[in-house]
Amino acid sequence: MRMGNDVEPETRKIQVDAAPDHKRGSTNLPNFHQSVRLKYVKLGYHYLISHAMYFLLVPLLAIISLHLSTFTTQDLFLLWGHLKFNLVSVVVGSALIVFLATLYFMTRPRKIYLVDFACYKPSPDLMCSNELFMERSREAETFTQENLDFQKRILERSGLGQKTYFPDALLRVPADPSMTEARKEAEMVMFGAIDDLLAKTGVKAKDIGILVVNCSLFCPTPSLSAMVVNHYKLRGNILSYNLGGMGCSAGLISIDLAKQLLQVHPNSYALVVSMENITLNWYFGNNRSMLVSNCIFRMGGAAILLSNKPSDKRRAKYQLIHTVRTHKGADDKSYGCVFQEEDEKKEVGVALSKDLMAVAGEALKTNITTLGPLVLPMSEQLLFFVTLVARKVFKMKIKPYIPDFKLAFEHFCIHAGGRAVLDELEKNLELTQLHMEPSRMTLYRFGNTSSSSLWYELAYTEAKGRIRKGDRTWQIAFGSGFKCNSAVWRALRRVDPIKEKSPWIDEIGDFPVEVPRVVNIG
Image (cartoon, rainbow, N blue to C red; front, side, top):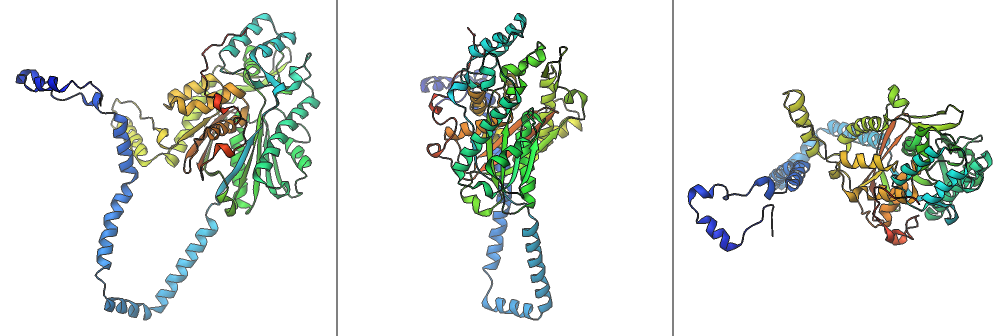
């Protein structure tokens, strides 16, 4: 076995030991940094700090046990006699304990369970290869040749594969981006995902007490949530919400809203639907900052069933542990970096600013600063605190310590907004290719499906059979405004991929695939 520097054969080792003293200094001990894997030292430190309480309590419990073992029957009778003659103290103490216990159980937050979720997989006739995308863009006859070439370059470097999905209205020649077609797309995606979810869970539509639907760019009247209520004939007192204009992070905002509502409405189911509508939001102009969205956004949606019923814990997949929301809208640059507006020819599109990556980085930093103390082990928090004190108080010139979030989570679902976003997060959070695999494969297979992409990523992880009981998953998404939101889930059971129905299950054996940096489009 080797550790760092190669170890010489035994005969060579004897010769080294026999060498003169002045020649032994450089070979007497190996270089520590090369021979010892520092990550194992770090893991040991993490284990020591995380279990420090147990190390302190075990000796204390041992001392108490030894002391109690010296009690005799006479000592117990004396103790009973003392309590008998202090009846008032016993009654008051017992009443106080009962009151505090009741208060605790009445005011503690209700546990929120994710019973199951479903992602919509469109029919094969809606598949849109990169070549078909470029063909339809040319046939639209609205883009200049320079901007057709620009879209081609974006698409070649986007990380999208050949089997993403586009709405039927935009695959036709000529395209038909109408309100009627947009409604058809919305109904197909929403009802397709909800039908699968209700079939998986066995929950009746009438049992749903809370409904939250989010779609950023399509807000018809009646609303999308009203469409769901009408289609499934949901009950009249349902708490219904429709979130619009909140970008790709709206899915986690919907989860957080449902969580807050479930805290005050006991024994309830909450249905969350996340989607985006492409039909009415295809940009037909020549502003390049607006053309990027055309290249990466694709059709998709997801439905999630949450519950606060204690009886659902046995069958639920996950428990919601934390939600953390960060909003940077007070800053003008952050507010305007993703902006829907008209171009010089009055064509409506969503403009992406060149400051987008910098703004996203600042939002992420704020979000993980809040999330870190909630999820990171004590060892990481101590290292961060000591480094911060050394830099700020003692003015030591050392690098800031970046906490290792791999010690807090087993799985990462990072919004598949684009290859550049995933590359930056992989580098800044020091994640491995395995951690990034669900996000990259979702981008490749389904494209940027906006707020629902996180659920395609979690479905990928399940289909690979990687979810074990107790595993923690971090979902993180970015959206216009500018927002960065996080959700932390803990698996309540092992998810068996054989028993799952998901958009990946029929083709999961084909993944992961190698995605080239540039894919030439014919």
